[in-house]
Amino acid sequence: MRRTILVALTLVLVGLGGWRARVYAQNKAEAEREAKWSKPFNQAVAEYNAGRCASAESQLKRLLDYTKQQWPDSDKVAAVYSELGIVANAQQHDGDAESYLRQAVMIRRKAETSNPGDLADALARLGITVSNMERYAEAESIFREAVRIYERNPQQKRAQQADVRDSLGVAVMVQGRYAEARKLFDDAMDEFGSTLGPNSGKFAVACRHLAEVDAVLGATDEAERLYTKALAVQEAVNGPNSAEVGGTLNGLALLYHDNGRNEEAERLLEHARKIYESAPSPDMLAVATTLNNLAMTYQRDGRITDAESLYKQTIEAYEKKLGPDHPFVATALENLGCLYRDHDQFSIYRAEPLLERARAIRMKALGTEHPETASTYSDLALLYFYERKFPDSVKMASRALPIQEKTYGNDSLEVSTTLNRMGVSQRELGQFADAETSLHRSLAIRETKLGSDSKFVATTLENLASVYLAEGQGDQAVPLIQRARSIRAKAAGANGS
Image (cartoon, rainbow, N blue to C red; front, side, top):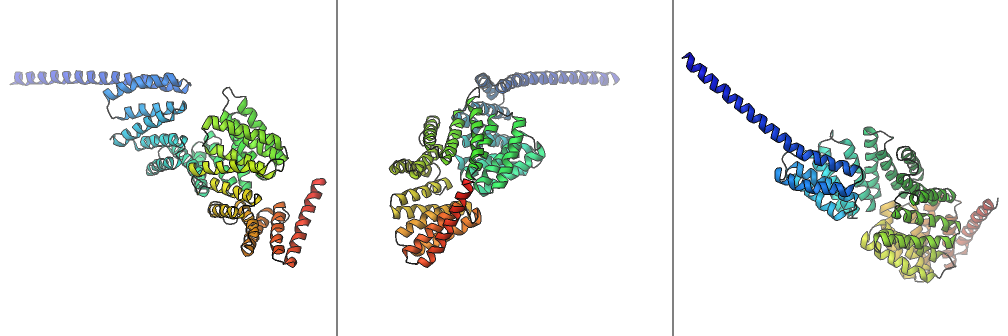
């Protein structure tokens, strides 16, 4: 009996030893298989980080076939596709990047072992690619799905959550929904501040985006504070001559320009121009944007010929880089058109083809209800007034007004400008009651926003007085004319002193 037990025990021990040997062999084989994947994957990532994108892409493509064979439809396959998408993005191969990233998203949706955060990351990368291709509404939908996944896992990847909110904010802002974008940028900035600290590069980017929205919405002081804050961080983190600094200088310069601080604006733009042009690989798109902004400062300084030259250079550069139907082209076209419209040294009839082309581009690319499209409507309204096409002028102003009211508020300067343009054309059409309503409303906004001594207040006073004179109500007109003259005399005295 004892012999039987010993034999049985021996057989068990022998079997156990065999099992251990098999497990060991299996583990060793799995480790070797894993190493055969992880080593080239990590090498490819290192190549990408070193800026050798072609080499990284080649390694990842070879690895993709092996990964599909060994782990079909797995997280590993998704990881390779995702990395290929990142590399393609870096090379501006947007179509390839989108294809790779859609594969990564599809696999992560199906793979049972996928972490929700990894799916959200894949969606975020896809959203950035789609946004780069200027399909902003589609990008918004992708970003929102990523945000929903992150929100269900609030403790995971908080910095990535902030990244997605910032990217979502850009997509929303480009579509003209500024108040909504502001909330997203504000949330992203808070999240970056708490996770990465207020001296991080990503915090500065969100800060700059928030400044851009505040500038559009007329919160000038807050926009300047945010731009200055972003600039200080970027100079420390990225260096004083970095592209990041150049972008923020452009934004701050536009703010200064819009608020009459032209000398400061020009100084910042010349600095930004030098940054971009002296870079090892000059960013010609950024150079073109800076030239456009610099042209605006030249125009305000009375350097009209120089402004015309820069606008033309901008249009040529944008068309070469982005194609003839890009919204950036429309911006430069509109600026040049307004230059021709507003300065007597040019034929006014040179303006209309430029502004009409800008309108066509924006309507196609941005839609008929976008704030930038409304800006073109309003600029055309003034052109048509000068050309004595008064019904067309009122029509354009009427199209601009509800969009601007919705976007900027009923009491915004954008609204006051369009009301002023509408009012003078209504006067010419004999629509005196409507003209009075438009100009009274424009005047109230300008007095509130700009102060009672603004030259723009004087302009609207004169326009309103002209309506009263046309109606034969000289007693109503005279006080307005006297007040306008007083404002202009005061401004002339200040400029002469």
